[in-house]
Length: 433
Length: 123
Image 1: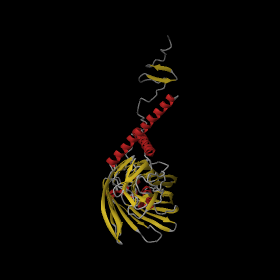
Image 2: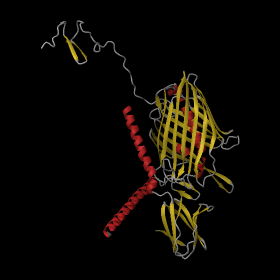
Image 3: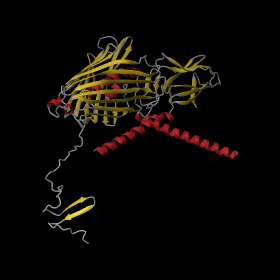
Image 4: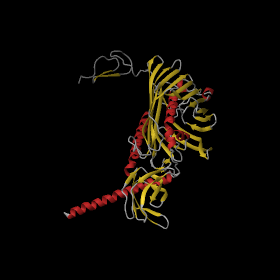
C-alpha cells in the first residue's frame, strides 16, 4: 500500500517539476522576447485612452466618407491589433508602469442594393471595441482596476442616385463604456450621437451631433479622378488633390475647439501619394505621409510617416510646449499590417510608439463587381473571363444527317448504337456476320 | 488566380486563428494579478504596505495588516503587475522601494534589518 502511495507521490512530484520547468521555459522565452524586441516600448497614457471615444467616432465617419464616394456596392472590414507580450504596450499611470495589453478590435460592413434604376439604398455598420486590459483576450477581458473597455457603434442608412451622382446617409453613433478602471475620468454611456453625410459629385459634407450640440463638421473635396467611380484612369485629372477640413467641438459650447486640414495628393500614377495634415489655426503641422501602393487598388501598401508630437507641461503656472518629430512607417499586406511609430497608429491606437505593431486585418470594397481597398482609385486587376462566341463556321460541330451524300465518313453516336456510313452505299456492312 | 486567392485567404484565416488563440492563452501561464505576502524579520513593526504614485501625491493601500517582528501577513491579491514604488509604513517611519517589478503571481517578501533601513528579498 505504501509503495502505491509512494509511486503516486513520486509521479506527482515529477509532474510538478515538469510543470514548473515548462513555466520557466515559457517565461524565459517571453522575457527574452521582451528584452530583445520591446525594451524601448513606451507606455500608454490613460488620458489617450480616455479620449479615444471621440477619436474612434471621428475615424468611423472618415471611413464612411471614403466608402460613400461611390455610395453603392459593398464594403467589409475586420481586424485587430496583436501585441504578444504584456510589456509591449504597458499602461503608464501615475502609479507606475502596468503590464498589459492595449487592444482594438474593429469590424465594418456596408451593403447597398438597387431599388430603382440607378437608385441604390443601403445600410452600414461600423463597430470598434478598444481600450487597455491586464490580459490579452478576444471576448472576455480581465476588467481590472486599471483597464478600460469601450465600444463605439456607428450605423446608418444610405441612399444614392448614381445618375445624378449624389448620396445621402444618416444614422446614429453609440458609445458604450463596458468597464472603467479607477484611474480614468468619469464617462457616461451615450446613445445620443447622430450623424449625417451628404455628397454631391466630388463634394461632401459631414456633421456629427451630441443631442443638440455639434461635435464635428467635415467638408471634403475629392477632386482626384478615380476610375472606380467612373473617372479617368490616367491623365492630369487624376493629379487633382483631395482636401478635407474638419472642425471639432469637444464640449457643449458652440465654438470651434480645433480644426484639421488634410491634403492628399497623387504624385505618380495613383500609386504614390503624399498626405499632409495641418492643425489650424495655431498648432501647425500635424503629420505627413508618403504612401506607395504597388497596385492602385491599395490592397498592398508601404508608407513612411512623420508626426509632430506636442507635449504640454505646466511649470509654475506657465504652460510650456515642447514638440518633437516621430518618424515611422508601415507595411500593409492585405491580411496583416506591420507598423513602427506610424502616424496612423499614434493617432488611432492610443499614441502607441516605440514598438513594432502587428495588426491582422482585411478590408475589401466592391462596386459593380470590381474589388478594391478603401480609398483606392482603381480596381484590383482581376481574371478576365472572356466568353467565346459560338463559331458558326466551324465544321467540326456540324452534324450531317444520314442519307446526305458527300463528305468524309461521319460517325454519330446516340444511345450506344453506332451507325457508320461510308461513301454513297446504302447497304449496311454491319450486323451481317 | 481565384484558387490562389482562396488558398491565401484560408491560410490567412488559419494563421489568424492560431495567433488569436495563443494571444488569448498567455494569461494561462502568465499571471495578471499579484498575490503578495510579507514576512517581517526586521525589528520594526510594519503597519501598512501600499503603492505610492510617482509624484508622491497618491497612495493605494495593499496590505493593511499589522505585522510584528517574526510575523507574516495574510495573502492579498491586487492588480499591481508592472513596475511601481512600494511604500512600507512602520511605527517609526516610512520606507520606499523604488522601481519594484511585480511580474504577477505569488510573491513572498521577507523584510529584515539593515544598517539604517529595511532590507527586502523575494523568496
